[in-house]
Image (cartoon, rainbow, N blue to C red; front, top):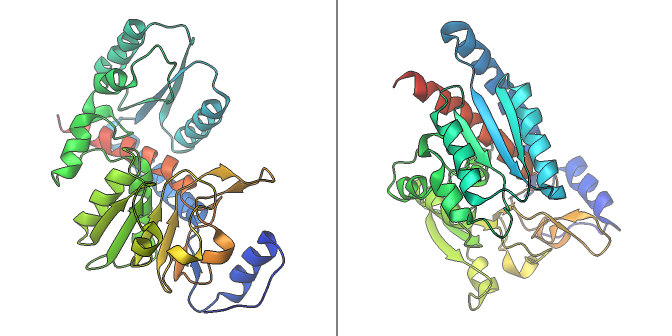
Length: 306
């Protein structure tokens, strides 16, 4: 489908929003996140009133990484807005691995805390795998513990990585049927690509997991009814990757040549082909933090049943 020419990204975005092109629906992750966070706050208030339990989320931040500082502030604000008990444990970059593991074990043992999140990346002298392994799997709201990854692949998930979980909520909200559909995931990380593939498979999609070294990648992607892109390269996916009517989910968060935020998908060329597409920003990003809050709430409810 072809549309009239617009002269810059902002004009084009507003054109899509205003005209609601027949085949293109913008998936508004920010609006959905606001809706779900309101529901979490209401559930939390009821839980506190009925049981006295307040979901607790601690974020452990090692060092002064500027991007990590921003992410942690967003998580802290969301936790407070949800009515959670919230703490950011800031530790010096020089902390030893043994000392960090002791901090994690303290929160493992404290029943006031239902969710533990260690902000990545960690300093080079700390083994991130050992740190993730040290978190109690029942409090691992990031879903990165090997036990939680194994449960996901076994079809019995407990904690799920929050970005893929948020994407599944988007499919649900927008009535996107996955059963029998051909899904292609570009990117094979443990954080997005691999768990995304399994969540799609669990909904009876037929899934192809690809990556930057996949041969004939555009040809494979063009077969997809559902295309999820998490490869970490600005505007990597262009129109020749996308068949008309596909659902396109852009997980990327990059800066273009002008320093503006952009995704892994070239929005201008792909949007006219897609039936649904997520913008960047305002698409997948807000849902990631929201699902962290949801999993913290669910962990608090499960703790009541022990």
